[in-house]
Image (cartoon, rainbow, N blue to C red):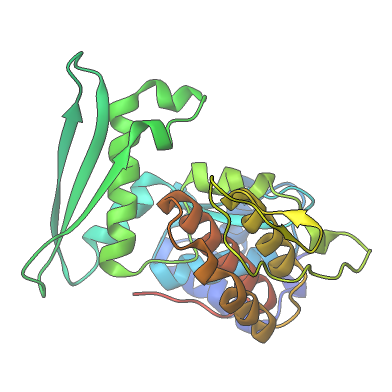
Length: 276
């Protein structure tokens, strides 16, 4: 782990600014963040990148409103806790509150949760419905189904209403972190050509000696393209090649594709942030 003195001046100034907000000495602030919200093995660049995101969105890493999730093969994924998402919404100048509605089946089992996110400058709220069958994971937090589904609906509604991007909840971060990190290997890989035909259940055609039958195949190819991108231009090209092929697929697949795009763009251009 590098010492404070090795951090570039602009990032050191950012640490000083954030430490001042937290009422801490810069060195103590850095050490606390490194030992509590960063993976054991991380670089100064990864630390600086997380601080840039935290500062851009006004999130406090000391209380774990934002933290770094270790990615498979190295690297980090910026995770925002539910407290961080609530802070993002409540501190937004255009926010005007949010409400929840629930759907249960005839056996009183949870089906879905809808979040209505209100903005002061819009006549109608942004509504997002999340379904338990699409969101539930086999982890301990999901034993509290209503609470976790409420979190999911609120986070997605916040994204649509205010344009928050480049940050993820823990479930999303875990999925991204589990993906293979092609850029972490020494071997230079050539991205496969983009799919030219979207395949549905009734049909499948070979593309580059491969059968494309599901969004997983397309996302796998897109992931390889993004991981092998060296510049922002490469990332944008991969986006253009693949994004229209996801028409008709589930929102979760589109969200994962957007997450791949955001992560790749932050990797090649760490100072680039897109915020609403």
